[in-house]
Image 1 (tube, rainbow, N blue to C red):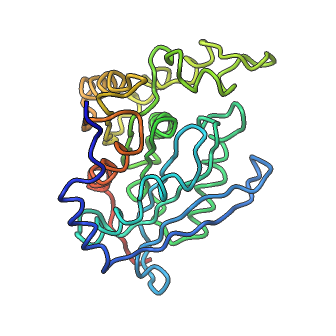
Image 2 (image 1 turned 60 degrees about the vertical axis):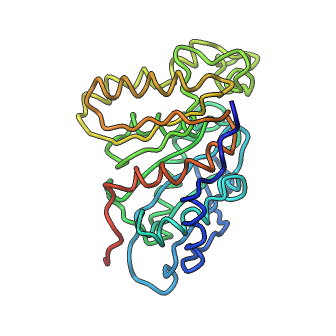
Length: 288
């Protein structure tokens, strides 16, 4: 199949309009007690943030395996896309947090990344920036490994997130394919072993184990799910399976299978569509 076009004509028009609305992208750091080290992240602040008094909705956007906080900004060209969406009114002005996570898969195994995210990152962000601090002002999203983390956090803590964006999520059920990094990064390994992948550890941390408890809470969390149709890890099958499960249980969801592989042309071209969906029900910026 042909590679997915990085930008549609409509997207190009939006980017042209964004010149009038340019947010700020900064690198920042917090001291994580959980990780016992400094933790670096990127933050997007909308136009007018520095001089204003409004509190803004916040999106936590997670990168893929062995990626970094810079991936969304550099490879995904996130800033011009967000600038354009805010300028056009398709999403409200918002704060976006992009933390470094290496190859942790956002779980408490190689490092206590899940605990650090909830005990250190979110409290730090809400103390440092003018964010809305209720569920209806908080979103999460990610790609590949980040999609795995975003789904895990949403199902485990639906009371904390209004919506989720899952781009090519690495949510392999029952197990990752042989060439998946989930098998080689020494995260899903038996305690005290040599770091070799253990299928039982993977299954203990993958989303199906969280499903019943999620449904029992009775909280609706809109989810945007996508995948390229040429994904080398066949994530289009995983995305479709999750979407069908959500729909069966009357959970709001959108599914997009687009043309392309497991690569940045797909994610760069679809992040705008994902953001428009997840921001639909979020509270708008408001004065304290």
